[in-house]
Image (cartoon, rainbow, N blue to C red; front, side, top):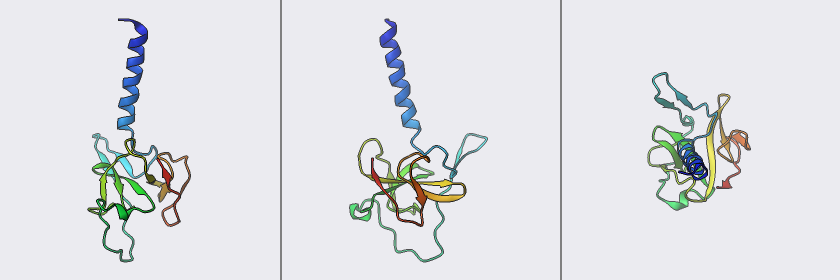
Length: 135
């Protein structure tokens, strides 16, 4: 076997494998890997004020300002809200479909929404107006 095609195939395979397993935001304090290798995932707490009934993820009109990308026990999910209540999330289409997205992460103990899956991107408090980006 020629070394160049072998090297190219190895690089492509490693890039494909790495991107499939690294969908969550690096540095997100909401995700803790336990000593036994299991993941403990924290989602934003519900506010003390009463929330309206959840808008289901199947209804396209629920996300006029974009999807909230939230890491849950089921993995990366697209949600209609930051709290990831039952029925408000669906499997992620990140990488397969382009749509407005905000990444919900915990940084320095505070819940933030970031423009990209990177804590170095523009991140603001979940209590302020977001700046969704199509990605």
